[in-house]
Amino acid sequence: MTREDDLEILFDEQAIERTVLELAAQISRDYAGKDLLLVCILKGAAIFFTDLARRLTIPVMLEFAQVSSYGSGSVSSRVVTVTKDIGSDISGKHVLLVDGIIDTGTTMDFLLKRYRERGLASLKVAVLLDKHAHRTVDVPIDYRGFEIPDRFVVGYGMDSREKYRNLPYIAAVRQE
Ligand code: IMP
Ligand code: MG
Image 1 (cartoon, rainbow, N blue to C red):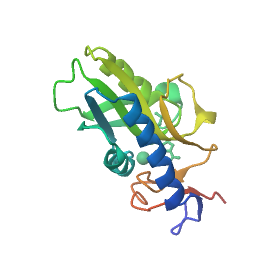
Image 2: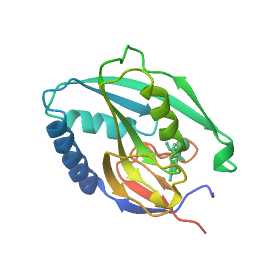
Image 3: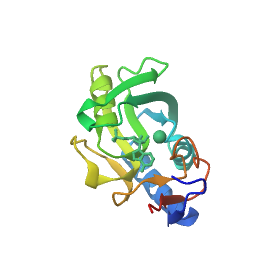
Image 4: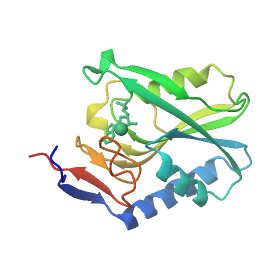
């Protein structure tokens, strides 16, 4: 990548806002009367998570987890590790994992397996961006913002080497 990346906007602020509102309405309906624990998967979900949480009309609790994956080569060789785990006892809770983007599915598959063992009332997945062309692990997605083509995207939490997370829109990085 060059010094100045060439960005092509895929979803502007208005489009994102509309979608986040729709997801929030759906989640608020589905979890009405239940105690929901919303889990932010850092760092990519950070911006989406805070916008989504503010739009929910039901009471929720917020938690944070962070993972990193090593080995950028083949997907099967990638190892996901938890660098920060949920800080409270989640047994018996309705848990919704929130991530910014799902690509191969390796990360979310790892998290689902990890938290499924903790005696939850329910465990679901919300992602803003679904890059489905790249999926190698079949992961159930309960709430999905946008389906995106097989392109590298940045902004609204998503990064390229830690840059661009603060962009208010989502853009694809144009390849030369
Ligand atoms: P997965 O485990 O292959 O589903 O990858 C998920 C993680 O890869 C995301 O949480 C992101 O950190 C990263 N990722 C995948 N595609 C993109 C992209 O297009 N832009 C930025 N990060 C991405
Ligand atoms: Mg990244």
